[in-house]
Image (cartoon, rainbow, N blue to C red; front, side, top):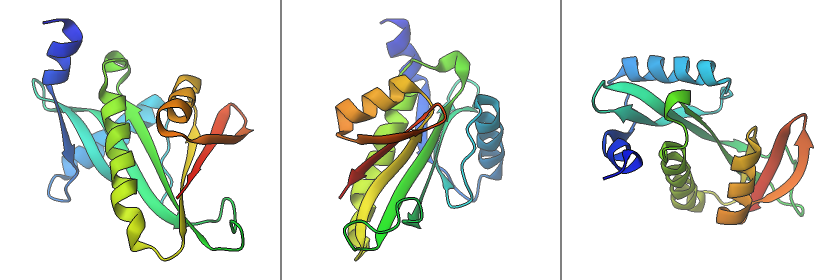
Length: 156
């Protein structure tokens, strides 16, 4: 068994719960540490917990909002799903971020049907490797840049 396999077995991905406020605080601190600032429309959805220390090493914040970033799309009101992910630097490149992205994408696919409006994914990717991955693996489209961030969307 290699280190990456061993390490991934020591991580538990779980939904965040209001019954565990300490996870929320750890997730907030982690996001601050890695320089990711989820906006007020996003809530803590999932955490990655190191089972040997019970410390949060990854966090996924996600939320829906009306299409304020793009306005209307082809004359329709748009509901946008956006997420922010943070992973503890010492455990980056171990697959935690990828697992959280998969959970975010699954959440989008499950929840988008509850809206009558057009839906889209709307992501500001600060990491160029992440942006390229989202384009290749999930068919997202880069529609522009804001500073060093890639703005990515996927309609429907």
